[in-house]
Image (cartoon, rainbow, N blue to C red; front, side):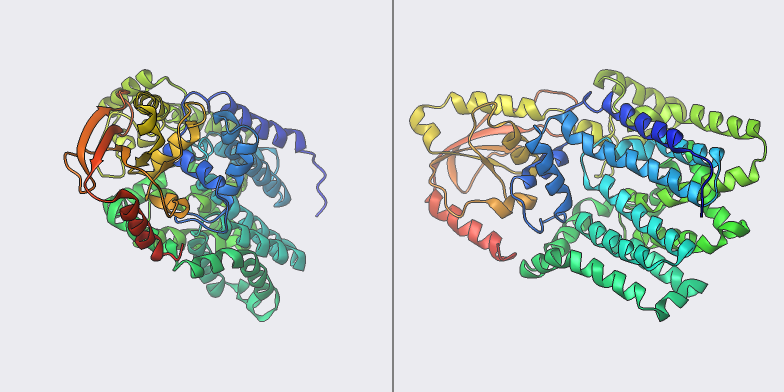
Length: 510
């Protein structure tokens, strides 16, 4: 299809605007606890980790080579978000959309609180969203052109999606079932879907082999989530979040969902509407977190722009709609972008909860309500923890320091301190939590320990003496980060360490 109108400058403007929004805000807070984990995984690259496939740690390694500053690390999710917007605009154009279809689709993605939030932090979710959309993008091109080359591109996209986050299985199942009930099932009589699947499996094979070789850690991780975080997920809250993710701009993706069934020109793309609904139902039924579905929305924004351009014939109505949605979304933006200083954010959250009922934004994974959103609390206190730990460690006599092991009870402790350890002249910190288990040394010679925990500890089966030395003082940090000094061993520490590490690693053939 020949495109006469040149909307490239418009698309570039949206992409640049997206980058600038993040560039001016993504250093207002420090790293999130999960960001430290992915950066630490980048220092131990492999084909798999306890929680995630290798893609995010690989990008983390690139960030580390470029300095691993907050800005540079968060450059990558911002870039992938900008690229998503540009590709959505291109797709709208190639589907016959004009200027206003592009503006409505791209403008909605630009200001969507969900997309702003996910593209702020260095986490798998940004790259996962992009991979889901890339799969949908090439499926659209297959419907449009039936060119075999797009099947090959789809296979690559699915493979990359698997290497990014395993949840692509849910979107794949949703779209696959949709294909079976629609005329597109004729695809199954050709060799191309199977070639695409073969390409995807070839790309995913190293990670699949890694999972097999290590007794499928992904299932252990899922069980851990079910017992700790997913137990608090409720069906009503899950569905409500789907409507609230994009705030006023939900009108656009809803228009896309309706449009693929109601508008004749968009009906060949009904599989995305059915696939979206099935994905929502599947993840919700399995008790997944609400944000697991976010990747399925992006393609609907493209169809939403087309549908609204079709239904709203006058430019004034289009301007009024976009302006209204943009104004209505403004109160939600501080929850997505780190626009406000922490004290201001606390007051803002209290005001919005008391006056506008936005207390749901303050509900954490444990099901309780707090004064800040969880992600904001998770970006506070980490460097302070390293500073306070360094004071305790460097106050030890030389003979004690030489045989002191530093241990964190969570990956947040270990990975954050390992990020700052060269700055504060600290040894490597160890933990059995999450992927930190993978690179634990099998043997350590130590007779005293500094331990960081988030609970009060009064006794130990390893040490006779336990002294609480310090803790994080930042009132907005999610965890207290108690720093304990432990000495006078009850057992042979080196032998006990060797035994427990071997026992923990045995379950995963590490």
